[in-house]
Every structure is written in structure tokens, then in C-alpha cells.
Image (cartoon, rainbow, N blue to C red; front, side, top):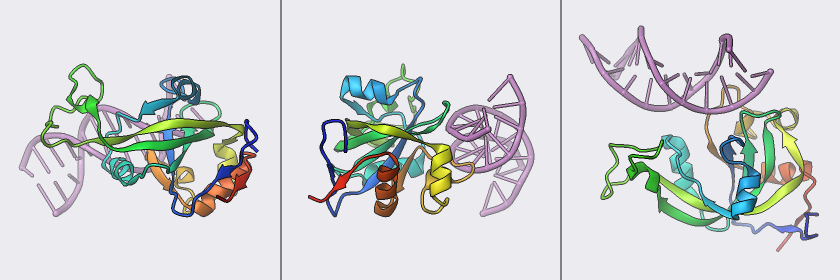
Length: 169
DNA sequence: GCCAACGTTGGC
DNA sequence: GCCAACGTTGGC
């Protein structure tokens, strides 16, 4: 059961994802404070393709990387999709891409909304003990992908590990 | 189209 | 801070 005592309702068509962020750059606390954010700055084609496949209502696990311990710390929800990443056109942005043109954008993203911080974070070590690299890509050795799909089966087990109750609609 | 060089990611 | 793994770039 979550903070407000509400079960998460999992709709059958909902897809699950995992989003990585370095907490010193942007943490789950930052997302809770802001409530929503544009997930901009992704500059990897595979990750971009996953961003483009997202649908409103999809849920994404929030993963803290390059921290001790790394792991899944909470959940957010996709609320807006097919957003052209504005930072690609901004010369002042670290994500500026001089090859991207407004009439032919290269990078897309989504807006996500804070859902909850987990009662217990699920460390990478715990993930490795629970999932094979094929079941959850984030435990793949040398994995650098920052946006990846999570199967419903893996999502349910992950929520269980996090101490979250899962209900039906 | 190959592949060496380089830059980045991210666990440890 | 180190370094393995990986993605990208660019010469040929």
C-alpha cells in the first residue's frame, strides 16, 4: 500500500518503462518538488525510440544511477507524449544539437508526472538477485541505455519488491 | 562499410 | 578516481 493508502491500479494496456537519472542532476525529490518535468536531453537513438513509443498513462520506474546505492526509487507517469525536445535547438543547452532543425527535429521526449517514492527503494544489488539480464535490462552488464521498457511481469515483481500493493482497475 | 580512436556512462 | 563497456565519429 502506498503513502496515501491507495493501491496502484494497473490497466491491462498500460506499458512500463525505466528512466535513469543521476540524482545529483535530477532526483526523485526534484520531481516530487516540481510534480512534473520534461524528460529532455536524451541523445541516444534507441532511448529516443522508446520515448517515442510511450503512451499517456504509461508508468515509468525512476532509477537513480551513479550514486550509492544505485536503484529504483519511485514511480512516475507519462502525461504528454511526442514532445519535440526543445533543448536540441538551444545553443546554450548542454544538449544542443547543431544538426537538428526545427522543421526536421531529431530528438523527442515526454513529460512525466510524479506518482510516488517507494516505501523501500530497490537497489541494483536487489534487482540483480531478482531478475536475469533478459528479464530486466538495467541489470545487463555494461548497460548504458537510459530509457528502457519493462515487461508487465517484471513491473509487478518490482512493485512487490518495493513494498507497493497492486490492485486491479 | 570497416574499424581505430575517442568520448561517455555508470558500477565499483 | 578508475576503468570496462559501449556508442559515435571519421579516415580510408
